[in-house]
Length: 409
Image (cartoon, rainbow, N blue to C red; front, side, top):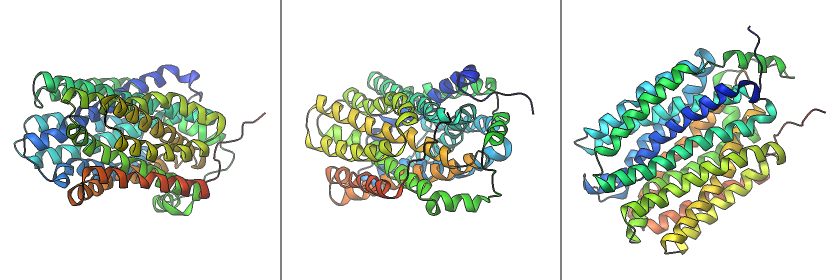
């Protein structure tokens, strides 16, 4: 093994490059965030909310399933190889949407988007954690998620502007082709982190037991109280996000906002989510993981009810910002918590299982919200979904213990 050093400062060039790569990863999702629900309604005439939200279901389930395999593939074959494959698959997404002549083509394109996001985003976060010390995991994950969701926000604004200036398609999706090309080139430059994983494993006080993938799945899903509580919190967080992705543009359009205004409100949520992760990730390295996770789940629920209670453009932006802050309190902190608990030699697989459950929330959220919106109303769908993160926060407060490693003196 060549001589490698673990730490963000010691690997700053590679760390910054991975931050930039995840900005482009997040931008791939932001490209669709504002305009795809409206494309379904206007171009393909989808009156049913369940049908309109089917693209999120296909995205969520494909991303969830590939997340599970991505972690295992990364542990077996290396992070960089999986990252490059993810970008190659991403090229199908904008091309398919540009040439889509039926809604099912858009649904298939979002299967490819889910695969792209699972492979690329999973690898950027795992590689940053590989580079960081145990007391820097919140910082590492915070920067990763910050970059990704700033990418989501920026591209949500840009795509909304381009769509209002030109048309809903194909012009915004030309940008997507450029995103894939740049992301692939940057990923060719970055170095693999296999040696850093070996260095961390040597530093681990407890040797790794021989653990099967199925055993890791059980630990992360229900056997380990800390890992499973995190999985539930992640699932309900993204269940809320799947609902927001599909219903917010429709809800805001009903409230009388223009496409550009909707794009701004839709972008404020991931912008706050991305920005505040810079602080919440580092904060969790100081005060611990549990407090931020529990409080963040409560803030998410209250923010959704606030959005329903108000009826002006400014207050909707305030609600979107609060929702983003609540999500930011949870998102990097959960990943850091899982990194605290899982051994380096099976950490990526455990993170893959967590991300399987977390990102299946997109699909469950879209299904749940679509059915409720069709049966009752969009407002009721948003209000009922908000109860789930609240319930998860209560469960985390009862089951989880603090996972932040005690600093050695």
